[in-house]
Image (tube, rainbow over all chains, first blue to last red; front, side, top):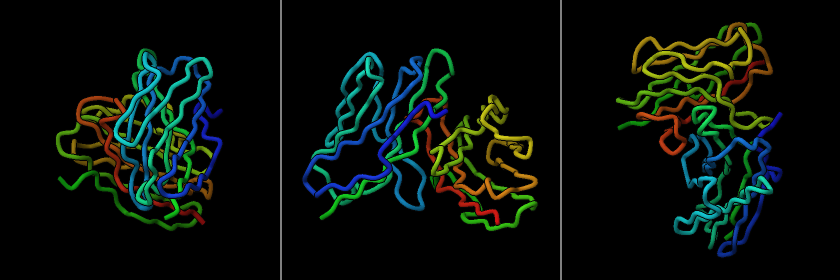
Length: 114
Length: 115
């Protein structure tokens, strides 16, 4: 069963607008969440993370929001730029029980139109 | 540093053949991970090593899969015999001293196609 779900396989956004990528999880033991960005023919690279003790973490144009009661997190990119076009993976870990192993979603392909 | 190096970058083989994927982690990194990416399941952790010792192989799908790390600078993932459902992109990642996701550096991946 997929414990981390990214239900939108793709998203297209106009340059300068906001991109919102969503992620849902089912395992209530997850307490740390990360987003990765992946360009074609490259490996994923870490983008931003959030601990379950927070509901928001911001890093420049990237903000991650966490709604624990809904088991939902989202990544906001404002403003979106063509260079943001990539596949974005959501990942989660249960620091206290599974020793930090990451569980990934299936990814969302973001296309930012100039 | 050259980053995590994987070879080959692409592999096409026929069902039943043995496939060996190779990884050179970043020098000084104590952790090495093997992941598999498919459209249906996303990125899945197959196995990870700490100081060359396999710690958790619960993600290895079947006995056809095996991984070794004979020294700190080299690891292999072997599939024998290969099947079409093994077609995927296989990533190796390394981390300096932690399992934490922020510190995992991924290689470019090996795209495997089993016919």
